[in-house]
Length: 352
Ligand code: CP
Image (tube, rainbow, N blue to C red):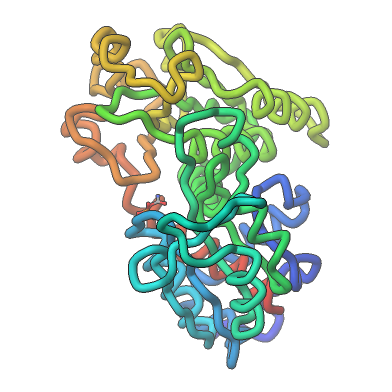
């Protein structure tokens, strides 16, 4: 059926011309607006949000690799009538320095102070992926590269995963939860730490925790000793739980008890991240004792027929058992698909 004029999805006007660095940038109303717009984009077809990006160009700046983010952003921009220019920093584009006062006699050829204002002359928005160095937590927490882009850009900046946040992933995660569980309130959403051969950044779990608390879920974070998220993130989550409007209020539970966490869960979201205790150092020995932090059918059997989520890429047999990932409980593919629809909603609003 052709949608009527009354059904025409509306962009979130308050996001027009704004940067998007963290879901903290979104009010509850803006969250709801983006979810509605994304659902319309999904059900009414690729052309449903019109061409708000006609003659608009976005630079997609990658300091690090990507599959989902790169492709979903490129397609979203294209479907909205715009075009994108991918830039691989240090590979096809100059390696960029971001620290101030550095004598640039090393490998880095250009400073962000010039590169970002120059890019701003050519394009209408800059989207950037910049992972942490994982040497010093206090440094990574500052998100220096992302902040430098924001400081020196004269066009909106969109975070495609920075040292501390991955807000576009969290947008898609919330749409996926709403679709699968019919809402957020009184849904037990569990983020479980998982084993991994590498020490991974905190960006995905930070953004997921924040978004789940913004939306009013009963949010449980289960992790081994030494692996809870940074207190600054937990404090923001606490504030969202406290300030939520409407009843019932969500809750925030931090635990090491997997039995309690899985019991009655509606969503199991697995992710690995580096230990705060060992940050910047190899965790080899420490991880030996944590190999059983893998999502198995036995763990899933304790839940309320929970769906399994992961941002991808995921290590089979390490983070999650094949029997879970290949089961009908796994929603990692529709979760990844939702990156496209939520980013279309975001871009259509920024360029409305
Ligand atoms: N989830 C996610 O951001 O995937 P990519 O790293 O492949 O972009």
